[in-house]
Length: 226
Length: 226
DNA sequence: TTCATACTTCGATGGTAATCGAAGCATCGA
DNA sequence: TCGATGCTTCGATTACCATCGAAGTATGAA
View (cartoon, chains in turn purple, green, blue, yellow):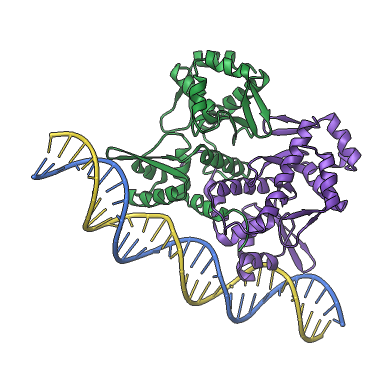
């Protein structure tokens, strides 16, 4: 009939509340089992199973079997970015699943976005890297400079292993709480992993919140001055 | 139940094929009447009316009465950007409403995206402005430099009238055919209007395609060298 | 006033899809 | 081999909503 991409397909996948809840849960970056996801969505296992099959067929989720468990996760970085973008739009319209509670400030400060750091801290980190000319901006694309390469190696991140992946190293990702960009891509993922590895930050249970320790706060401020 | 924005609401609005078709038609930037939109969606006027009420209630569309006509259009720039983003995602997954036809090349070359220029020409224009340091990039934000301000005034665009609007002057918008950014915002709108005003380009009937005249092609290449 | 056009509202219908109980299949531990 | 756990498939039910005919409202033209 008409030319162009079909947005109705994706819309209908996201449009069901149960599926939307599962996708939001998976924005935490962890791979989850159908039983866990059913809990998040408030539905039975059977229903969840049928939803997950649809999301997988639609290319939004991927699956891997491990023993008698089945782990679902967002199929690609792009899916997470697309969802984050939708969340940003929804948030700007005041479409919230409930009124902001006490958890909210912590969520705005630092949280996981699929697999990298988001919230105030995520935005500050990217700003600082750009200010230090360790990351360069060109349109929507980001590029690691030579100085940046030296810098992350010094932090203990192996540059060549980042490069191996087909995914981009640096990438912008719009933040729904800050309405600014933060750093995604394999580097964004590696940096968050580093913070947690060093004991600077910790993921809160069953939540997207990231809590920095006192020493972690200091280290972060030193590494990424404002 | 959970914290965060509700994407299911928006998803369900976009998820209905009739509504998706109407939204896609409105991405052409023109305000359209319920009768016209019903035609685009292949439904009766009554059904279209109910869909339009829902889209308006959801904040995606706005409406203005003019005599016995009612004109619907995308409520804000942000709606167009969000839809364009979804289209980009859908296109990358090969979710198309039909196989690419003969119209496609022209659509990829130059088309309207809500109210500004998209496609190959749109991307080239932004790249050229950045290369000439007339637009500056900072994260996802764009800023007009002093040189850029002089430049657009020379083209006959009144800078202060652009500034009056609450909408941003420059803004990136992801292109689903090029997978790169082009220029949105009031300046993007003003530039497209300029091209059409000078007779360099013309909108094709009932389509998002923009056809450049021979002299328009030359003028465009001179203004925005690669 | 009268008729025509543009659109909305109401009401009834039908189809689709979300939901869950029950049964079936696979994996693991003993 | 047996039972337990995790998950899928099947089938039946239910609820929602897109759809359209018919009637109602508003604007404009004659």
